[in-house]
Length: 308
Length: 252
Image (tube, rainbow over all chains, first blue to last red; front, side, top):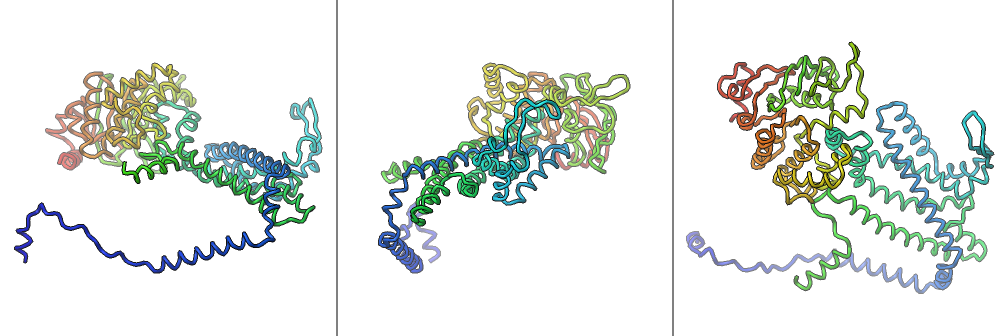
């Protein structure tokens, strides 16, 4: 037998393997259970008349809800803008050679991360109790103009400050993680070319840190979108509070909470898509090829099916 | 071009440089060899003030590195002054350290534009010429991650040359490369030495390169220069026992 195989001509290609695949009964059972639950849920959503989908549809685009949605988005954008700017500043301070600067940053993070954001919102809302007037002028010298605190710190501004300053503490740690993820050699190379510390940070280190910074920042933004609902306690008519105001009159509590939830889901979806493209932009240079966009993937899959 | 007198450097309690004195003339190529931990890389970093020295004096092109002497008092240079001095010294690292967020071309034009304020058009023209010279004219738009180690190191050399430095420092430029890629980097360096008379201080174990391009070789051991001579001297009749031991290991 051994001689037979040795004499067989090498050019003959063996038959393609045609084996009977292993059966996976467990997968079929799991699929069945998932399908059953999905149908049951769908049936319940459709047949339970207490959902009153007509009312959900009616309020979905009502002007008060849309106004609340705009306010929620504005608040999220403003708070994240403050948070990111502050985060970069605090992270750079944390990495400074000056111990006083490092300490100040540490203290800020400790304070704002260590107290509940709800408490911070209430504190900013009531800041007039501590400082009834703000004045513009030379410290310990003459003042030029004076404002009352309640006219400057409106509920919206109080909410924006509280959320933004709180976010700064979290963003600082995210940015710091990004900065220390960039290899030391990058800084050495920049220095050896005569670039200053600031130039190195702005041109070399931060752009590469972005790859690490963007995913958790996207997370923070989505989290912020929903955290803004906390400012309902200081009567800012953002999305959740708008829904509450409506159902406190017509008692369609569930329907309005569904309306608000649907809008939060829609905005979260949009933010997730945006995050994908931002990540893709900062990922250039990090790997040999960029991840495909969903459109590219779709086009490729269709292409494959046609045998290109 | 470089002059060192009794240079000492400590890291905490560990004394890495224990009195280095040497002189490198303009146009000279000096190779520094020695086991790892002997202080060669640290000395190289001291030359462009990436490390501060603790004792002794170091001059580049007649100017004290990192300090200004007025009478018998030493003043530390300000950051901007240190940066200006560094801009005139090119450095090539063992691990290339190309800027990962930039293409080959962007890597080369970055410092001329930002530090020397060269107009972008001139910087790009010069960078293309340099990349051509190191044999990468077709890779100008590639990111570092898309290049082989040898190609990255050649871009790094072009990046350093773009600042038209009066001195080039090479810190084990081929140690992180596959054997097949070492040649292409060494060829570029030989070209620099022969065709452009660039002053170079090279920390390397490539004795073949030393023989072809170096005017002098220094052997360092435990923070001191223990032997100095022509490349031929090191091949034929090394004096110190430590040098013989070391060479027998790297020349296999």
